[in-house]
Length: 95
Image (tube, rainbow, N blue to C red; front, side):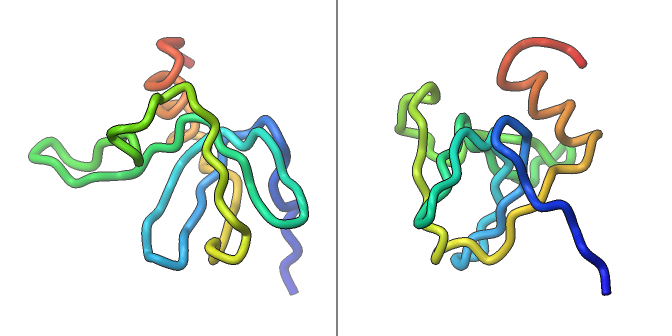
């Protein structure tokens, strides 16, 4: 049996929703009923390959988004390469 460490507040996570959408975001809070995310992005296919774009295009990107736990199929830490790309794209800091 494989046991994973789970996710921690402050790290970049990948979340698969029951709707099928995959999000990458910084996890800012976990409570009994929901996850709070900062700057959620989604992967989109483009002519240059996969790119990250805002998940909610018409919402202030600095707003914290709350997602109910019952809408989440899985949440895991994002792989380091994609986490670096996320941090660079949301903060302007190249890791």
